[in-house]
Image (cartoon, rainbow, N blue to C red; front, side, top):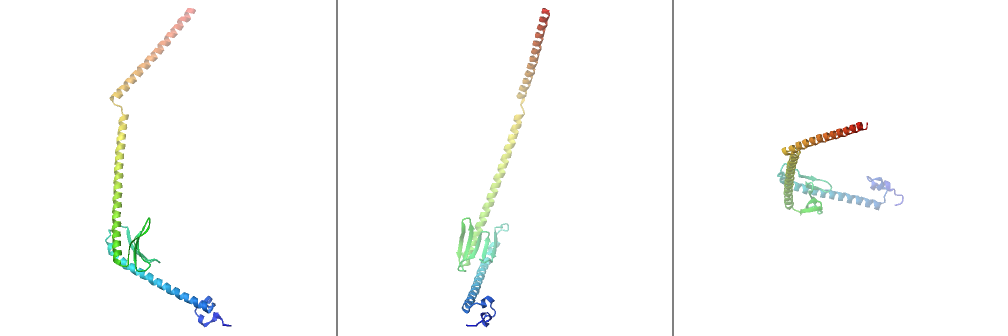
Length: 225
């Protein structure tokens, strides 16, 4: 081992410089680790490819069912997401993924209380039936929601009509209350006449009283003279 140059060893040709400077045992360990990692990556890639292939088979079986969905329904968008964890989406909250064994289909739905496994099987038929039932339930829920919206709209329209009728009746009643009848007009005329007569009488009485006192004052003034 004395005088051996690890950096220039023939067995290190094609290896990075930092690996070439390592001792032989560590160098072999690094090489084994790299081989294991490559094999693991290859296995993972193969398993992921197998998952995608299985999900594609399921998608092809589901597409005829999806074709029967009414054209005006936009709840469903069946598509395969080939991510690190491949998933076949049925809609925004329902999807299918493979189990840990890479062979079992798991149909899952996201809910407010967490994820719920609707169906789980290694065969396609149970998963296809579960997805078909799921689509049917979602369509019924949509119909109920639309019916509820229509009922609310009808109730709001009826309430607005009743409110408009009540407002019209109130306006008519207020108009009738402001317009006096014949008796009210007669009474108002009599009150005006009596008021005018009383005012004239008071004016005349005041004038008579003033004249009387002025006359008495004039007589008293001439008597004393």
